[in-house]
Length: 381
Image (tube, rainbow, N blue to C red; front, side, top):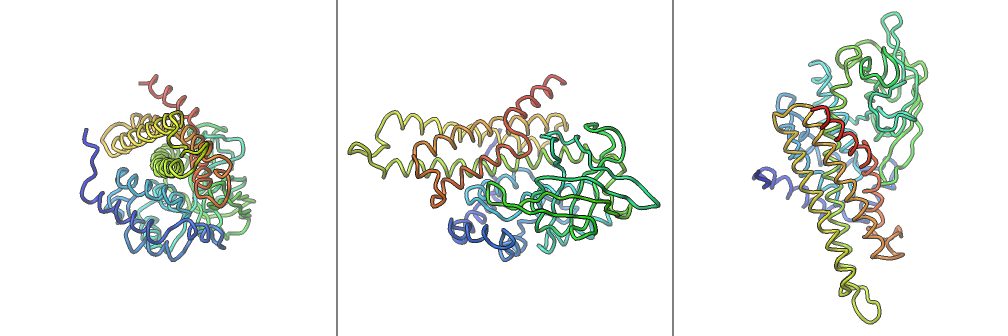
């Protein structure tokens, strides 16, 4: 199997890497995160001009090609810089769900705006107590006089504070946790009955708890067939899962690099701590974890781009998240411990990297959840 990047992918990697090195240092990133919107609108426009917002979409939808490997290349570089712009939330998760379920009219109206940087989206899928079960949807959608009434609450809505439109999962039929009966609706964030409570996440990004109190929307706001959204939602989340695995790989590489550099400058007992054999062994273990995480992420991305069944692709996504989750715990904790007390201070970028990977380990399911899911999927073959 050939793991090397194509010429286009190498150019994409260099383009993102150049932006990160020249325009997105640690201090700049912190200023952006502390700003009013939590991201830079100027950077978002630049992403659109460079074509980065088109990467997760097919050529038929006006995109770059919808390649998981292309997306992986970008997300790895974003992870190194701890990017706070809502690329994952608005483009990878919400945009791909819109592309998967939307009608030709809906896609023609919204996708060009999204790819041009003129529209922010957010996907409201998680609920209190749902854990990592995408089918555990209790927010109700009932039909009354040709209108849809939404009632319920969503939590951890990534990019919820900045999104102009929300993609909301709601139950039209069936009981809680049933796969059938779930629909996705487009809702204006400023619509009557939509109450948004904003907050900052552990990694510096913005999210929201959103309550829908008898929110009226037209039936034309539904994406796809009534009650038939679960399969598309699951596949989009699997793609997003592999994307954040790549993001974590980039952050883990930075953690390793910064730990090795620190060990060459920090002195204890009259010698650099990097000369201590016990610490060398620990950093070698960190290196191996990073390489294992990268390899399985590449494998998962390539499988998503293949003609394999949806079942096999889901198993590959879970295998990657399980392995990467274990690497996050090992590399992140070792990096902090080798740095000592300074490793937990806000002044050091390493502490922020640790927070980022800790958040990524939990997003869309932790290592234990995906290990169990992988086992179930393999048993069902």
